[in-house]
Image (cartoon, rainbow, N blue to C red; front, side):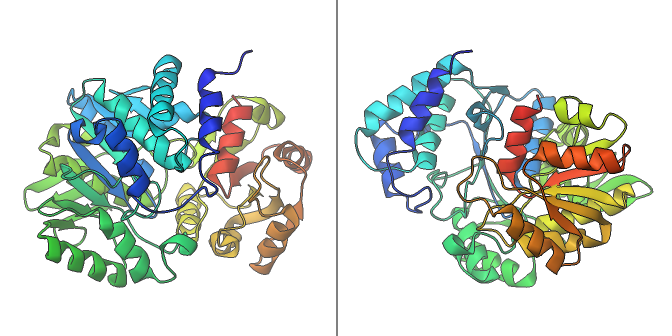
Length: 423
């Protein structure tokens, strides 16, 4: 099978800057100008920042908008199995021909100038969006907000900040207020912003920034509320109450994401998409049940779940989900990056874990070595051992319990490898 041409173009783009992440907007502005400013011609933008829940919230908003007949572009990152996942044109993943075409144009416009991979591919996404009619553009921040490559939209239709927590300290700051300030950097003068549940220290920063800009806020717990009552999701704001089915995305934390999505749809005047938002959304590697493929064939009588969460807040969310699902004695297969708070991620999982098989993430230079992951797991009270691969770990689990419930977790990069190999 031949390699897609876009793979070669993307590989070239990786070599334009010595760093994967170098937060500034100067290079993005330069390339956008060379491309004749495609970011100025996008359909109305909904810009989404936050630490956790951005992808799920985006998926719910997209499902709700599309249910009303709206055509929706979407830009997300990182991808899991293929780069094409990052760019949706009016609901459909970008095809190979269009992707190669816009990458070619961006390479030609950029020339030999330094630019990061995320910056040039974000410009490529904007270029693609201008060439297909749509009613909205959903834009997910890559990292932070203030200096993220997506933060070049002068006046989005709506901003969103999902829950903010400690993550990416090497880029965003060591404290929660510092990180919240970076996320709040997407706020624009006069543009309303939906704000999910926040710790007080983060909310104070967001509110101060919004006050300086005259950006109206729609804040969880103040302007809108969401809760579970009698097995239903109940959303309420000043315009009234919505009584809806529970979200189809698994986990108690999805109630909060659903609330953000519903508040966004109401702000945009698309109340009719409310039920579809919570019942039709799909977002891979968030407590995703694997139902076919080589790994499932290794454990045909068991259950295998996949989650790409990788920080302490994600660990809490996964633990809450396991509790809601009534899963005890789960077998964990975990691989993490060395830039993450691995112990903080694994600690909430300890009460649910029977054993953890630690692996190194294949092909990732920044992987935490399996022996280090196992050591950290044991430090938080999880019985752990090392395995050379997910396949080896699955074999060991199947030998001990052919009806095992398995959770593969710790990194989106690991999740992507699983989805590529388990197709």
